[in-house]
Amino acid sequence: MKQSSDEYDALKAYLRIEGDNDSDWDWFRSRTKRMQINPNSYLIRSGELVEYAYFFRAGLFRLFYLLEDGKEYTKSFSIGPDFVTSYAAMISGTPSAIWVQAMEEAVVIEIPYALLEELASRHHSWERAMRKSVEQLYLKKEERERQLLYLSAEERLQAFREQYPGLDGRIPQYLVASYLGINPVSLSRIVGRIP
Image (cartoon, rainbow, N blue to C red; front, side):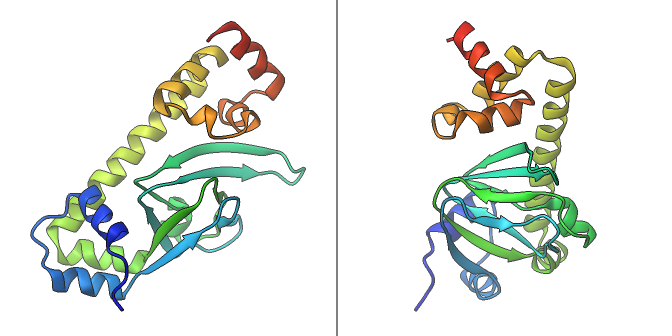
């Protein structure tokens, strides 16, 4: 039986892959795996080697650091359609420093990093799509750093709401506070001041 094409069609549209024929996509599907991910499960754990990138059409993932004392620092959120992985660990072959947690149910396509490299070397459309994806990731990372260094907590909350419209209604407030780099009590005070 052929795998559901919904996620694969979404991936093709997301990457803006053009001109690849059905046999290319069948070849790609045969080397990837479609997986159901439950809420609160971990796609990647800190300390693990990461050999895969994951594409998901719908859902929500949280990327975070977990300190030895149990304190968590939310690095980012990923809302579908998007890719999610520990990029540094995947590219460098070193253990992941972050955790990737599903906040909502999602179906992912598990794509081996070696396959992505092979596709980029064989198909210009894949190379271009992957370069564009990395460029977008870099822009997000630089903006996140700017916000943390230059903006007040109140301004960071406003930026969070602009970047992730409606997300603060989908996740617990302590995760919003963790992302903003403040404690939940401070977040409550800020939310009380701005609508």
